[in-house]
Length: 160
Image 1: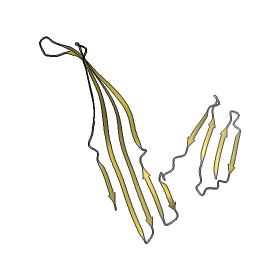
Image 2: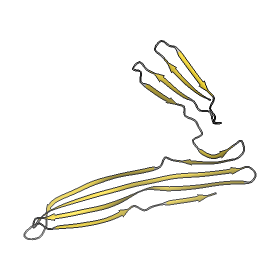
Image 3: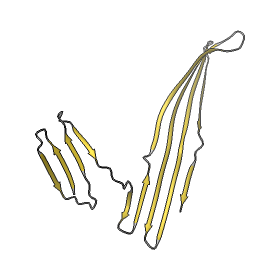
Image 4: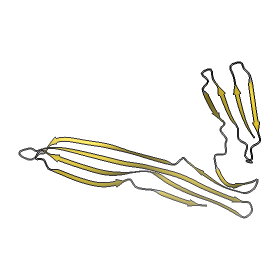
């Protein structure tokens, strides 16, 4: 069953209820403010798991942190003279696209009097950089370079 609650300026209350086909009860509240802007007030529940099946004695559920993937880029540039004689001016430009990733997933299967299994996948945060570099010197020459580097990737798998 879910309940929608609307509160008007004149303090009139309209309660609309309907029976949901799902076995899980869901409750949401909406409030109409003076600017007629709808504000959602979600109710936070203790059970934050996604379950494949769950009854009074048996369950197979998953817990996780939100997937974390950050994608971006950076620019680095340098304009200097070489230490050669005579000095040669050069300009160096680095374009560095990157991504950062991390994740945590835990599977808990509990079949009473038969099986209990807990499997955890934990990927620590890491960063992977790609490089595209160009160096232009005062004589009109260009030198291009590409490459990549990454942090240590630590993936931990646990089963109990």
